[in-house]
Length: 420
Ligand code: UD1
Image (tube, rainbow, N blue to C red; front, side, top):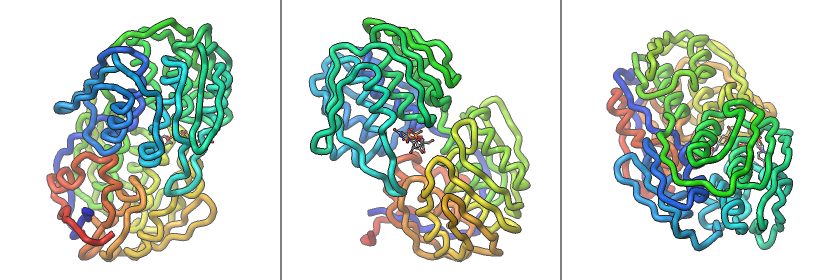
């Protein structure tokens, strides 16, 4: 199992190319099930989560090629409508196949996802919405068994704005008979991307980009192609790494509007930011002011940047509070940051960080994708050597992270390790 060895203290300078968005790709791949043909998704990142989704769709009969950065998916011969536990337990986004399988083939058997590393992650909203669209759903032996001759339109009002439930409902409603209204829909860029892709496939959707979606069901969709949006969390992670380590870094190939919540906080922390049409440049001397953040649904500060922000604040000149309102116990990275000398107290869903003069290197363990990113940032500023174990977590969501960081001047090596 690989680990990273980081020798902290180097400044970061240069340009880093940002990959296509992981989570958008994970939403668009299952949507191809609805097309009945060949769709091409360009700017698709090469990541472990994408391979997991590919394996899941392949065992349903989808043909998948991923030459370079284009994913070519052929949904003309789908024969199995099942998502087995082995794959769903690796990645919760597998649950995205439920809506399209049900809408297109009238039947789906999808493993019920368990909790994740930082606690419970329910799917009740997905299930209730599909029931409103007419699906018969039973939970048996750990599986969601869903059936429907043809779904019908309905009004669905989510009491929590959920990215996954909005995506699943959207993919089901596009082939339902009649019209569907989704109130309190998620407005994340990947939902906009998914809705636009469905429209390219022949779906009729009004209100894209707002939290009120109106879908007029159609009898069939056709194949379409899509150009993926950039990964705003990957970009935010490199900006935060540069803020922490000091230096001048440009993240290239991004949509600056998607990152406003993060860049505003980086400015508050004392960094200088410059914005191009598809790039953001950050300059930092590594001496940061403490800045509170509270995560919120898009366009608020993303929960997927909470761990990285916490790492950034560990050496700020004072105390800051980091509150997560999306996942109330997403703090597995905190005990590991404490091993590096960070001073952090958890109180409910808030972490109070008292900036220290210097972190010191140690062995730490990745527990999930964003926790790994936070430990790498901490390792870049810690004195001496930090070893980050279980980096398979980071391979789920960051393409060639150590190469991109080395190109910016970081001292980071991936080595094969017996340690687990
Ligand atoms: C997606 C992202 C994940 C990100 C999260 C929040 C993917 C593959 N994953 O996850 O990286 O951290 O958005 O931005 O795109 N909820 C319920 N019932 C449900 C569904 C959700 O109560 O049926 C709650 C969740 O517990 C959470 C909130 O809704 O508190 C938002 O979760 P949701 O937006 O659904 O997250 P995911 O789509 O799973």
